[in-house]
Image 1: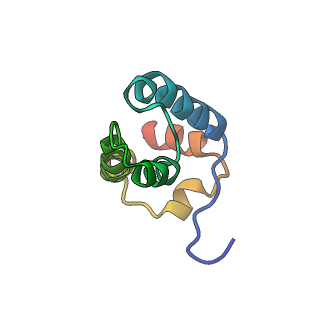
Image 2: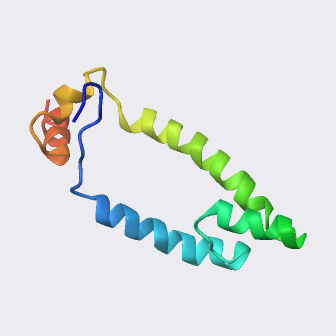
Length: 101
């Protein structure tokens, strides 16, 4: 891992990825067909000149980026450097130690 690179915290990665797919299928499916790759949906829509439901692939990534930034700031509630928080090797352990103070 290079200098400044974020350490990998994979304890909950599978659950996060799985839940993202579930939300995509159940919520985005009825709206847009639930394609998870905007380029894969925008490209053929432009070629075929079929724009129904295309708005979600333009608005979604932009609003998701903004919401992700706000969520990151809410989750990262401490001024400690990220290396200090994760040096124990367990993200969940560092949270419990921070909350027990």
